[in-house]
Image 1 (tube, rainbow, N blue to C red):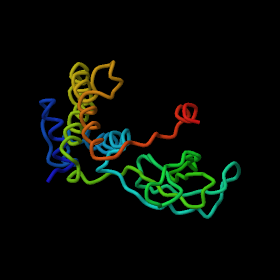
Image 2 (tube, helix red, strand yellow):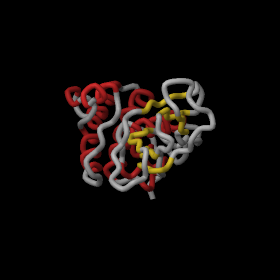
Image 3 (cartoon, rainbow, N blue to C red):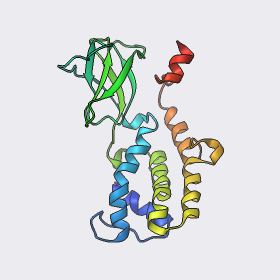
Image 4 (tube, rainbow, N blue to C red):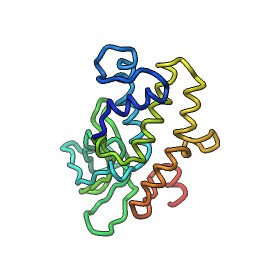
Length: 206
């Protein structure tokens, strides 16, 4: 059974630092891991629509409508790290819609504004470490080692080494290394990916 402590300890081992048995054990390594672990994992989960971390559900409509431009507001679940596909129907073979925007109320609540009365979303969550496939676990360990290198060892060269191992060389634009292996492996488990809605894709495909 893989745990957050095991992943953090394996990252520390790569740095030749002391491993930990708890985030609250009081050592320097434990305090740093406790501070950085959750935010780092949320980050690497949110940069790609991983199949093992994807959830589908119908979104609840907000009781307060948007002020202008759009007709409907739907509540984004608090567990959603990344919304990567939105549909206006639950029909088999439905195509994602792109005519929506994501807004925040300035606090923790996020909404999808659109002109669709019903919305369904595919989004990434933070699954338990024990549910991670091996290719993601390995990427998580090495990328966390890169994140820990300077705070734990003060060695920027070590951080650069594991950054390259995790994400590839500078020319790879952070899409190479173990991340590239993990995404390529993960993509084999899904049909052709949707084109994400963004100003760039809107301009290109509209």
